[in-house]
Image (cartoon, rainbow, N blue to C red):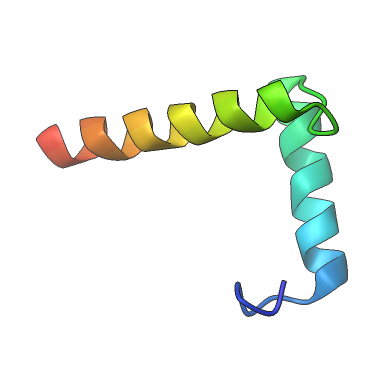
Length: 49
């Protein structure tokens, strides 16, 4: 949380909200990889637009 310049509790709340919105369990490593790939694809597609 320090590297993101947000309070630890804020980071936890955001991760919980992300889990709820995306209906994923971030306790599983495979879901972190899926999330990272999705973010990279989103960023690449946003640059093309």
